[in-house]
Length: 198
Image (tube, rainbow, N blue to C red):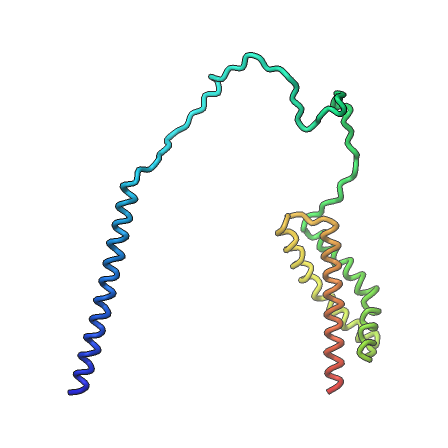
């Protein structure tokens, strides 16, 4: 008998809760209907068509001097022939295509083959390590295999900004990747040194 009483009490509480929710929803609906009706009653401005009739404007006399971009200096007039432009060659703009990627890859490969072994030995020396030439080449070739992907990512970022890659952007990409190479070599040698200590 006790369980029936509990069941009926829960059922009664549930019905009360749903009744309160229904009353709240009815209030919201009536408020929304009231606001919609107010919106309908508010007069709105409607501009159908604006016509400009420039042919009805009449200019009988036009006098004076109009200087746009060029102003007389010291009250002295000058003509277009007096206007000199310094001729400077524009820096070459390169598209984000394969030519730019090849140029960056070439610069980085030259760096790896020229400066790479010395940098690697210098970093290895910091950790008391020495790598023979074969192992150095193995490490640097592994880095070289990753260059194509990294250069592609940087070029994609540069091209999404302005669609054109100039020499300054190319130099910035090369320097950033050189810094990443240096850091990755440092982390690699550091990891090798810690493995050797264990």
